[in-house]
Amino acid sequence: MEKAYKIVEFGALPSVDCPCGTTQRAFADVAGYPGTIHLTRISEDAQLHYHKQLTETYYFLECGVDARMELDSEIVPVRAGMCVMIPPGVRHRALGKMTVLNIVFPKFDPADEWPA
Image (cartoon, rainbow, N blue to C red; front, top):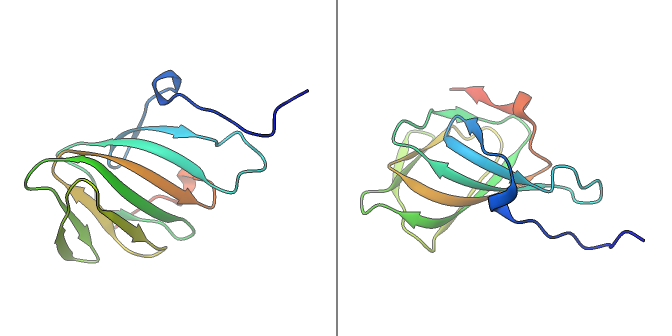
């Protein structure tokens, strides 16, 4: 019998390129879970982009001292332990190297990444 709960080890997930750097996406294959959880390693050259359908919530796990987010042309300093919710339509990118846990609703769809 299949268990109702799911456990994922991010180290066992494939790493894929994204506009921010590289990411590992969990629970994309779980029909009953309405979102996805991403462990994202953001590079120095993250690309400005937006989503038409997705809401992303970044929880900053590790950040350099000069880490910032660009959110609709506003530059906001961030640090480990902070969280930012990015609704659809907000043009965004991270500035500086960092590692974030990204909680995405509804499930991540690569067709919903739009260059800004």
